[in-house]
Length: 489
Image (cartoon, rainbow, N blue to C red; front, side, top):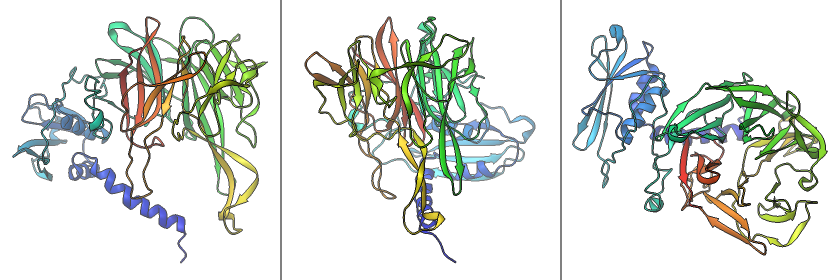
């Protein structure tokens, strides 16, 4: 029997990834018992402290239980009907022990013991509010998300918030004053709005598109119809896959407006869409190219948004390559992922407008485009044929009213295949053209996590903070977190 090299490589990757994933679970033995449990999904958590979720370990345990679908109670109540489980956590000479029992007869079905970590003391994390029926997402501070070297510089930051659903992109909606601020994240399944209040995330009613083949690309916020209310445009890739036909990713845009505590959705162009403040731009995908035709202005005059007829001269043939920063200039990504200044009138490079600054190798959401003539990797069998090419979208560029542009500097690397670990820190930087040269400013020390996307928070017309969408993996397949970083401008 022949075993392909790809299958062997996949098995090796699986063997390497599974232990690393298991090591990140607070109670792996308890986790296996929870997965095997076939009874009522109700659990009583018994601890020696009155506030079991006042520590990072307690919050991680709660997250572990909720991932298995258990309704968690605390206190002295027995699960209804005696058909659930009881998880008892006890101190063990600086470490901890966990007993998982059946509520019906008290029999222990799983036991686990943790030794105290060498040279470490437990870090208390204050809880802003008790859990409610709305189930706000608890704050979880992963050690990989806050580097030890940067803690003194960012000690005033609240902890990252765990985000379910592995979102790909995010957008800031509005400042709700004392009630917090409103934002939305994009996942493969839909759009989930949140209210961020006192470092807790309260979800609104989500939008679910119901298309299993759709894959999240990016989320845009703006006011292109100039009605004073922010709108969202979500863009997914509709992936069509064939065993011997390759993958074909077609963009699908959906327009959202806030409707009470939810979102009102309407279909948008079947194309790529970008929003910048009160402007909107559209470009179609070609049959065998990422883009087809010119970038055109977004038409918001009718009941639904569509691609207009007027071409945008400065954009050329690539919607994401160029971003206006004023009436005369625009920023443009070069082939080697550097920024340069170009004239907005025709996209021509301007003298002195080259920026000698390394933004790193950012691999954003990818789009598959079929090849007009398939290529062969090796040999001439069907399995060796390459039928599509994958294109990566560049990092987001956001421009403030004063012309300052913000984007991501990718300093974090994934490490060597199979055996390496991620190293380095991602940053958010501000780029400004002073009239004769570029100035680049790093806004914080960096975070030991991959920044997938970001959004700027404006209060009283000024940028006050940035919302960072973090992930433990560069492709967004790991655990996701939201981090709010104040910006001093």
